[in-house]
Every structure is written in C-alpha cells, then in structure tokens.
Image (cartoon, rainbow, N blue to C red; front, top):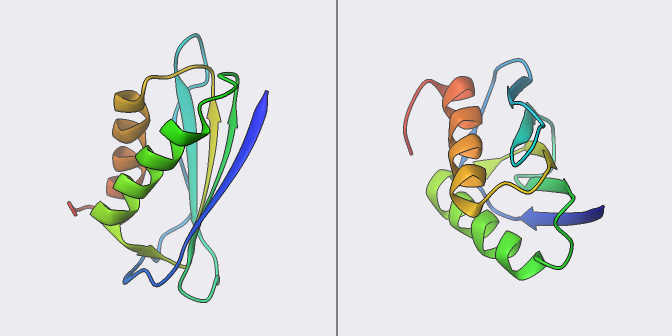
Length: 104
C-alpha cells in the first residue's frame, strides 16, 4: 500500500453538507469519503492505494479534479484497490455532486 497526500490552496467552492461516502472498495475500484472541514480555503486529498508507483498519475488526476471543482475547506479520503484514472475521476465527481447537487 502507498499513501499519498495532496493539498490545493485557494479554492472558491465550499460545501455545507454532511460527510458522504461514494463507491465501494473492491477489485479494481475505490471509495471516496468527502467532508467539509476548516482548512483555510484549502482542499486536502489523502489517497491509500494498492497501486504503488503511480504518484505522478495521481497528481495529474487530482489537479484536474481541483481545476474542475475548486473546492475549499474540504477533506477527501480515497481508498483505492487499483481503479483506473477514469474511475477515480468519476467517483470524485460523484462525491462532489452528492454534496452539492450540481456540476462544476
């Protein structure tokens, strides 16, 4: 297992909803826990993944996600069992849409 941490500053979209869990950890899938927390306008994402050695790919997917949503004061925890980047993006979008009811 590998643990990665990403932090994006100066988000503009705050969410005000109870924490949400989206997805299921299983063969080739992942779960996303998203929750509002005071982080001085930042968005923090912690990833625990079985796919070791893909930090650059995770960085690209997380940067793309942050560019779409611009979340502030949000913590996201991802538990991954080898999901593809497309599935990661889908689950992240589903988690935010569950919290906001909207699109980027």
